[in-house]
Length: 303
Image (cartoon, rainbow, N blue to C red):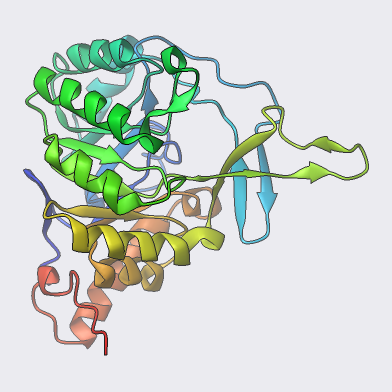
């Protein structure tokens, strides 16, 4: 069964990627699963400098999902290059480095550092971050900021560029077109929804950050709709993310137009989820006599 797919210039042996922030740096899971079996790994988001993240409480369960306000805690690019990448290079799996900043200069400095690390297959840009120089406006919710940021990054690297979109916008297709026009090789979506949980006895927010990012099965139908809209609007590959717990969930995204998918919250429930999804997609293709996975992408029939 041929499950190969490509996201821009990156060829994957299968369409299942572990999502940033839910799989550590990959090394945390190598005792539980064979990383070589994955389509790719997107590592925990990196900043130029180490970041401590938010104070506890940083995570809470919600109906059919979870809310997190980790605050993009991370070891920083230098420590990643020294301590994590040498281990990851031992595996035959594409490594996607998710990275972020709060100013365009921070993104630019991150890219320049990442360019010098051997073994990185591509970069995933997290644009769901507030631009502190623009009064906290999130990069990914403002078309002009998105355009300027991706244009700047594109000029600084030859690595394949994947841009991870925020769903907290009026028109995600509009942002996707901007990203494509500025030279992105692929688009991943969606990032989490801004949400809130209140402790009614204390009358206080459960999370120390007040709000957090909602993920898990609760958001999947919205994510599928957004992937379908974006896949129709752009010509570059789309990677579907949002509440995928099993192969059936993943297949919804693929049939809607995703060339690959990312497994996020499910990794906390069952570390083997990604491998089970790969097996489930293969079984589906065999059962439906689909010899080439690419024939399944965007095969949704309407009317």
